[in-house]
Length: 222
View 1: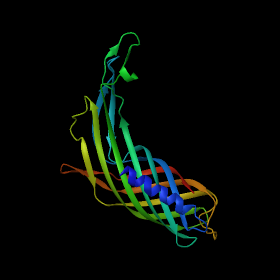
View 2 (view 1 turned 90 degrees about the vertical axis):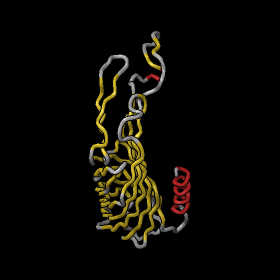
View 3 (view 1 turned 45 degrees about the horizontal axis):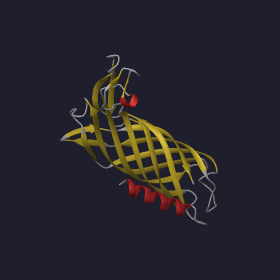
View 4 (view 1 turned 60 degrees about the horizontal axis):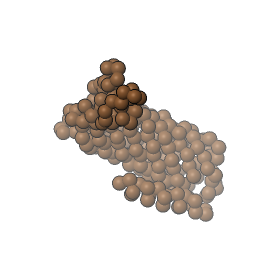
């Protein structure tokens, strides 16, 4: 899957940089908030004995990276295909023994476990330019997820793969610099901010988790 996404991204960049091309490459980074809780637990610092709470949600992502390409049918109408990788949680665990000389565990991590939720999503979104700097988009989304634990959380209930029903996306973009609503066929690079609202749900071993979420991020076109 990673090789497929990388290949698609390279092809999109080549097409986007062709002379007089209606294609443009897209990159984005952001954070999201929302969704049902997937796991509430804690990890213990093996040095101090203090505990740290972990609460992962189906729609919360502290780091989401996306990329793809869009095709402009007119200066005002475009269609974008993209893929995104999101992750939340901690993996600050490494098996090893305590070193009295450095007072640290092997790898520098002292927690007795870690837990993370990773999602991979694909989207197809149509955009309409309301003004030269403001665009609104509506699209469809398909995701998969995995809750993974390490150390003492390796066998935590709920870990494993998560499947999602097709979801929907509403996105608002504000673009700086060169406008997307331009008569030029090969506009200059531009960047901006986006606000997103996503409706989707995950299923794991017969249990349904609401993953509706909102997000904010930075976007760039090349």
